[in-house]
Image (tube, rainbow, N blue to C red; front, side):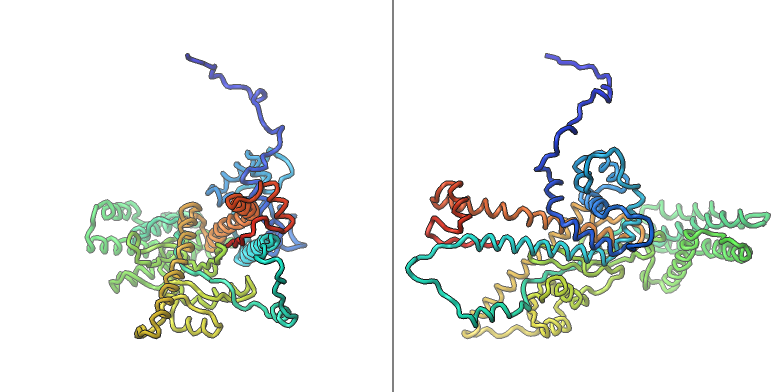
Length: 531
């Protein structure tokens, strides 16, 4: 049977909308909004603003919520603003009182937000999440303690501790607790793969555009000769070859350097002529390009004359001169272009970006920074540091030993001789090292989660500060999802207790709930829970 309906477009007035009903309480954005400590995040965000000067700011929840939505859904600035306008759940998530048919702010404001949200703002965000997770853990622990376990013999009185022992337990502060898991990774920028010949060709084209701008402001009768068509054909003659030889590439670099030197000479001459003009002859954008190109020429000339393929602070992108090549030695990618992160992960699953560097530095030198950040967040040092063997240098081991922190790795020096006396102890230590080495898997998974699910390996911001804010925003979203799991954990724990009680032949669920509320067990067996 064929059922046909006219394809004529229905009028907008006759289109049915479900907005006359309430939002679904079980929606994921409604649940996530309830789990996020908005007031604590807003307090950290407002520290970067002036309380008196300037226009009235947009509500912090709208800003922070929009950033979370953008990186959670991997959308662009324009797209996420339109999505917020169209989706009532998104509007509820960012704090709207009701549905509105307008955008929360212009998409270009995201650039200013990224510039404003410096490292300190994300440090405050991180601390707010850590405090909220600790509060939820305490709540879960109190619920667990409320379910009193039965005694084998009711006639026997419980063991009582003396007042001195109680005072000693309450007065002794916690100095070491938990394990700190650390590792490093490279976050790549969204730039074109750099080659020496390609960078010189791009620089030549930009200098030709600058010459065109300056020529219009001068009174010269003829434009300075740039040979742009010949230079373009020389460049294409090399890059169109499938596998150009080394001498061919070297000759192409020499030609482009000669064209560039001529263009720079013309630009300097015209700038000297326009020196008396009251307004600057070039915008900041072109002046910045000119400075980067001059540095690029010096580097390329040095590598060409000395026949080397590296130099200090090598420029691989004219638009983003802060990006550096970082040699990683991976099988599928020997060199990555971006920033290097030193990230720490707690046993709760909360990750924290401790250091963002744009040079190929040794991540093992950040050990002191990582440990001090852990102390600042939790108020105590970790019991052990789980890290790659690269972090286990003599200096780092000496630093950790001074703080009574154990490095979970193989000790330096020759392994001890196995005897009958130390055989069991050496076997235990070997098993412990293996277990702790496997604890590094979650932080590797955190990197994979960020790069595959949140585009951590393809940062599209243009400047150094906005790129760092982009990276920190991704880790903020991943930490909020950890907080979301903790937010739902009390219900999961209660469900686990109920299922366990039923499996052991206890009463029905209704009577079990009453028993749990009274703090008594029906079954005499002792049950332990690991959270």
